[in-house]
Length: 435
Image (cartoon, rainbow, N blue to C red; front, side, top):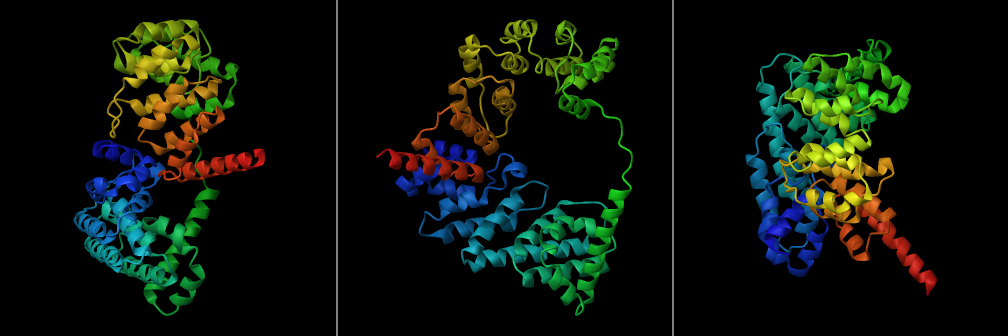
């Protein structure tokens, strides 16, 4: 594996990186050092930061301090700007800290004090949020790994409540829900000794009362429109319930209103003749054109399949989801050629991620995606969640080799690691029984 290939697979979160390191770790040292200052996760909100994943590779080297120095330097220079890099580096340093590196713990607390000072100086209207506050709360959750640390953090936040009126319980809701409830008994006891802890406790309890009141006095839901309406209609799964919305769409003449009416079918199938939608997919009005193509991607119909094949060459990004929905076995090579030709990059500038999701959803229509496309998604996707769902489909179709499963034992996705371990164990038992 070349260094470039290793870096790409590292960004994908694949376990083959561990196998490559075990064969020649020094060849990839520079890439691992690079990763100590660059976030690896494609979608951190769904996948997590992948800090644990990188630390397993760092542990392959005898001089972990070298990588720690790089991570600390990057963390010190990282500013709060609303992205996920801060959390990634904080969790990476926490991995070092849990492994006994005091310098990592010191760097985390140094950043804590720095952000806390910024919060003390901040001048904003109550209720406004800003990146420093969000990063501070994430850091609090990481550092509050024991009762002593949590009590110190709670006391600091109590001081913040008392001295800065613009903060309230909702600013640290995540911290309270994830840590505060666990240490509540200790918090109540210690609050008797500190007015700042008492302040934190009072405001946290007020938050709970407000939350209960809001549950009892929920406002009447607004009428559903767009995607929310379409999802509701999809769950109802009643063609008769769709007819009024289809008639509403057909009754519109102005393009903007027609497009808005058509969004009712962006997640559920249109119940009538698709010819009007096919015509709207050729519209010069972008909003109507987009809405029509999205609606067509939910319709299985010979006319829709024919239209998708006609448009595939000139408008592949729009036509591919429609063809996938209307897939037939004779389309396999054509589909493979187009999808494998889409450049797959970390920033998803080519729309590959959406196309991969359409391939994975073929099972919902009881269609089997070509095996080569499942392998393609596994090897190229930067989304570990998609890789996880791909493996499940490959497993059901007996496409997983022991070599691939061994790679999966070191994947960034915890569910993939558990799945691979379970399948390998089952195969070992089966082999032992057959001897």
